[in-house]
Image (cartoon, rainbow, N blue to C red; front, side):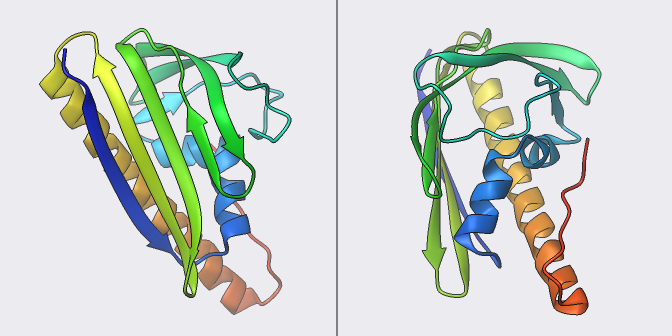
Length: 168
């Protein structure tokens, strides 16, 4: 199967610290994926942190289509983490010969640019899987932008810096 590569970039009205916290929080990850996929994590896990061991599986995650149907399993593994700026996740997946997801968080004027670079080789149905992953990451970027914009507008109304991340 051919290797699929694509990048998506979205500017959000939030600081790099807020975007990094969102991008590495289990609640943020689950929120971005919902309702297309539900991902399972160990109950005690709340963030991917700088103490995460590189190159070793952090945990096993199951992916449930629409929150109901098991479609894939991952041994969540990070190859690189630059706290506050970038991570590279290279996890073994049942559905992929190879998988690499890099997220880069960069200050950009009055907000933050979030860039996801993906490179993967599906084991089967390459064109369909490639299309699905691209649609899925476009959805993730829409949720990211909407959620962080809502947090920013709540902060402007309330003026106290309080925020919340939806929990799924």
